[in-house]
Image (cartoon, rainbow, N blue to C red; front, top):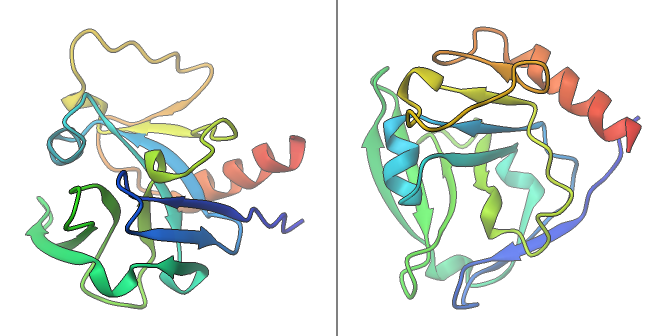
Length: 158
């Protein structure tokens, strides 16, 4: 089973447009302080893909990046539209590493079903996550392959 999900998305103003040309590796909800800041909300949603599976239809040359360091010291490269400020993806400074498409930038978000909530020790106190429905992690999960496998099983059932 390698169900291909060709989904399109872009920034809020329409200057940046992209299409995913392969099944994402997984989707999770992150409650870390960085995701709260970047989303200006209680959490961020991260759709993990290889950057070479993202086809930019419009505005790739317009994308701006900003680098920050995570708590682990790893550089996080944040790509965004300079016109409207919408985040498109986060990744490392290494091109061979997967990136996190900001799931809210997709045109159709109705099919998204996260497999996990991570960094729950940073979650807002009013957030309640049912551990029977989602894998829950106080911080970063140790075994991302298990989450990826769960994501693929979930897609196969749809």
